Image (cartoon, rainbow, N blue to C red; front, top):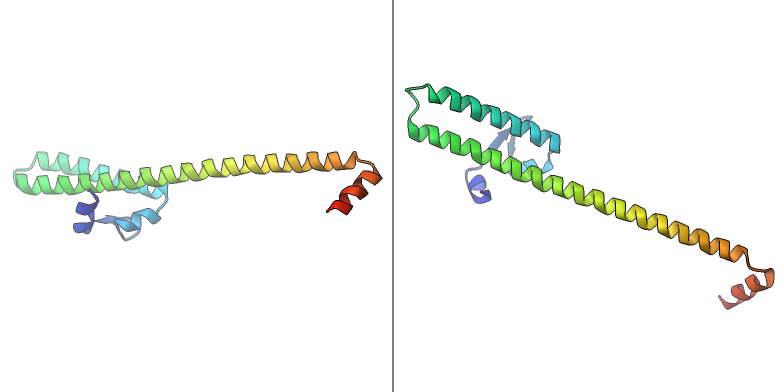
Length: 128
């Protein structure tokens, strides 16, 4: 799919023309807008060409094939970016949990030190 998309130099209409690699810079909402537009275009083309005597089967097949390829590319990019976002959110949640635990450890250590006598604290300080 990717080789075909790149070799055809597919362009996607969204705020101008976007190349296949430009899709990776778009938001999930932008990609969804492109997807919906392509699906609508494919549906309208299929509806129109089915009733036409002018469209040749080869032309119709090529147009449908290109639209479907664009849909597949947008879907793949969307899924890839969504997975990346979910992984980033998972990492952030994990880091937040680690930070919370480290903060609790520091609080416990401070509490433990504050329970020591002055002589114990001086001894600890001298050993540092």
